[in-house]
Image 1 (cartoon, helix red, strand yellow):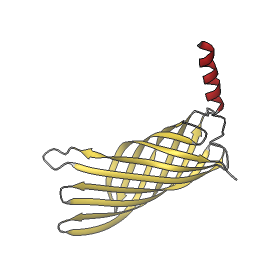
Image 2 (cartoon, rainbow, N blue to C red):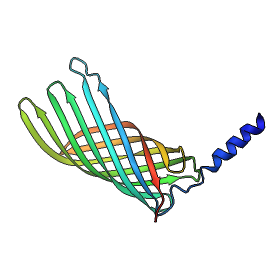
Image 3 (cartoon, rainbow, N blue to C red):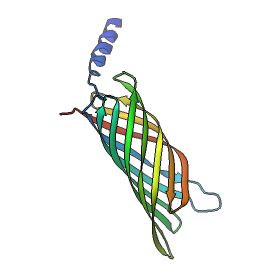
Image 4 (cartoon, rainbow, N blue to C red):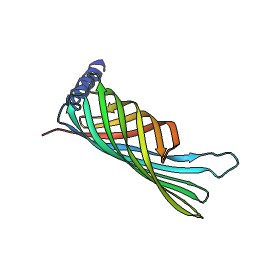
Length: 177
């Protein structure tokens, strides 16, 4: 029994030999966040956030790319819909083919539409997200990502959002040309 377990571990470890974070490789993926937030003496807040991204490793362990942040929030008769274009950089740390830690920085423009029974307004500004993450590689090309982000949003000279966000997502790593 002991020999069978060792054999299974060796065969499994052999599947993790792809250099996912090597120069020239690409990554495609993103995160999703959804839920509700209880607001005292008010209607609960419903939110949905979808963040697809695409990047390329410009050097070993360093990826650059861009993502789109699509966000929808509803509370009573008020809705907020926003779209952000966020170029990003990621720096991966460590040599493990199973677990890679990284730091991500992304920032760019945000456009938001606020709607209520009185009408709709469109405002713009900028958004910055930064924080550490970890990629757990399920196989040669797919990782589950856990990322803690500090989010800062400023719309037309007003800071409207500063918060810490816990993200869960995935990435697909494709070999370079």
